[in-house]
Amino acid sequence: MSEIERRIRNGRVRWVARYFDPDGTRRAKTFDRKIDAQNYLSQIVTSKLHGNYVDPARGKISTGPMADKWLETQGHLKRSTYARYAGIVEKWIKPRWGTTPLVKITHEDVAAWISSIRLSAASVLYVHRVFSLILKLAVRSGRISRNPAHGVRLPKNTKTEKRFLTAGEVFRLADAAAEYPIPEVGGSTAP
Image (cartoon, helix red, strand yellow):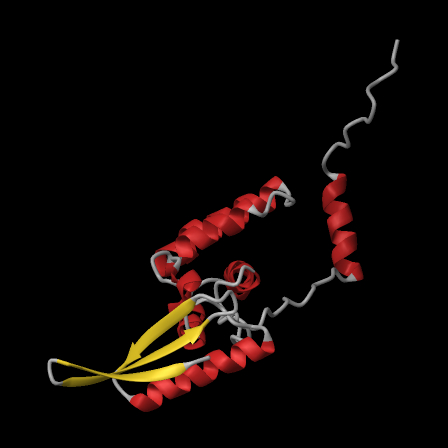
């Protein structure tokens, strides 16, 4: 059951939206306008019906601690991969998002941040991947309802064209290499 209650304090009208979460805990949120309270309750009812209700209090955790929790779950990685992920978290994610609550991260903010990173396309893709994986864990943990990094437009990772030697270049390389002595393999068996 949900309801909206009108309150007047200091001559100001406020609207309190009350509802029960799926665990049976009574929740309330206050709004300046009745329509905002009604819309909020509609969203709550819909999310409960679809089974994707997220407790708003769980999303108030800052991104920095969530990134640390995510790193703790990465024990299956090779040491080098783990070190690279940890480096990305420390250098790129925590400075920008460390104190930002998960629920305050928007798709637009992530897109602007990704666009501002001045690295190679491959490195930007890697930074985005790590951030998206952190937010994916937050979704699976019931802290946020969706991943705001999903669908962000990323730079194209253009591959450089491979260059092969021509037959003439191979012969010139072989001639130049002939000037250098070839070391013996396995050592000498001379008496």
